Length: 272
Image (tube, rainbow, N blue to C red):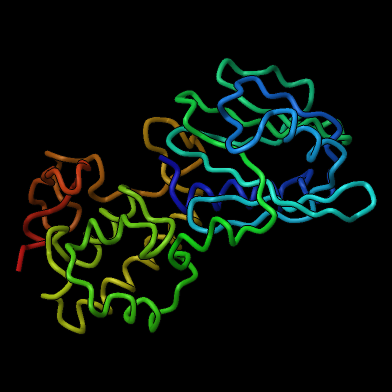
């Protein structure tokens, strides 16, 4: 599943690439699978998006938001996108062939298209008047949160570490891959309760989360199952059960935590 680093990589490509999506005008919308549009009809989405200019693309957690306006520069709205498990966004030439799993296409006046491909078809596109309609249900962005706020949000928590870090209302953007990697780097067991953490362990957890996410963003995410081919983040434990730990050489093991496959080194991450 695309997590914060993969979604941030997509955002940067769309905004900073050549050509950039910013300033592009949408002249036509192709909806190749109706279920990709959530909360309104496909015709309602077309009426609001066709003719609109893209002014901004920003991310919170795993969500992308595209700020759109009509031809007069008024009537702003936001197109929200969640990639879910296998979604990908591409800005490509209009001559590029539609892929078998393309679900949604914005045709732009600069002869480019923004294409949403999604083999599992779980990704969604919808419109909101304000991103706060979505963000208000989420915790602070996991990459942007500062140490003081992170430690404050840990205070009073009684849950196990992995379920807590996966909870998007605690911090937004972490998923299975980067929770496992962060806990490994922090040398903390995923079943450890927050109540048993010392002060230095809490600070170590914050540092690990921030460092892992920043490194993964710099690496354009992780290439897991070929979903993000450009990603080269070097996973240490995720998906490596039975292989040697890169730190101590012990075998990586796989557990089931919060209904999720969970990878750790039992020597580096002992249960307190």
